[in-house]
Length: 323
Image (tube, rainbow, N blue to C red; front, top):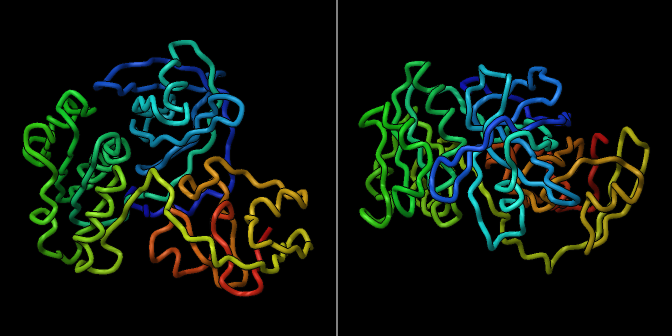
């Protein structure tokens, strides 16, 4: 899922000591954090769809989509929705203020904007964050595009002033005034050469997937916040070969590949440990992968050349990784 030129998946992470340059409220319960390198150096390049990790404390790592200008490497911007009932990441992020130091990791991109002459963008709530730079990129390249952006209320919808500059290409749909996005209308006619990009809560993603079943393969690109619901009752053990390390191990039915690799002394970066961030991606040499992540799209899973070792397994008796 990928600025108008597809990027390779990021396998090498960059850790950066950053400082908060500004913390601006841009909607009800949404703060826009602008982060710069503590030493004032430029940050790594990124493209629309990329996200970074915020390392907010011991074992508190959260992923947020970059929503600023990719041409400005003096800072990164992320929009964070306050979710008091979550596991604490958003509360910690909202507590950040100007001058506070925070470590960041990345960027990585599994939701990059692929080349096209026409796009349909769909966003729900804080899912607007990766879509904002995508729209700017599509506009700069002269593509035809529309955005359908739903939220609970207008006051809860971030970046509405920025989006207003695009005129009627942007349709704001506050639920309390207009109900839910009319996906049956928006996606009624499969259009060749049109790509659909959607980010938001799981009910929206599932509804968009259902509407796009008749669209050409590869037209739909999603970014999920939540892990997939996987039945693990039938899991069995399999052999794990780490080719570069020269190790042959066994992954038990109740173990993850990530756990076994770490127990064997192999350093593997991981953040979410639920298949949503892409940090733990490893290259596959041999074996039929049972993909259980929310990162790779259908084409990428079919290619069978990489996997997220925090959740995905092997369908057969033997898996070989380039590790």
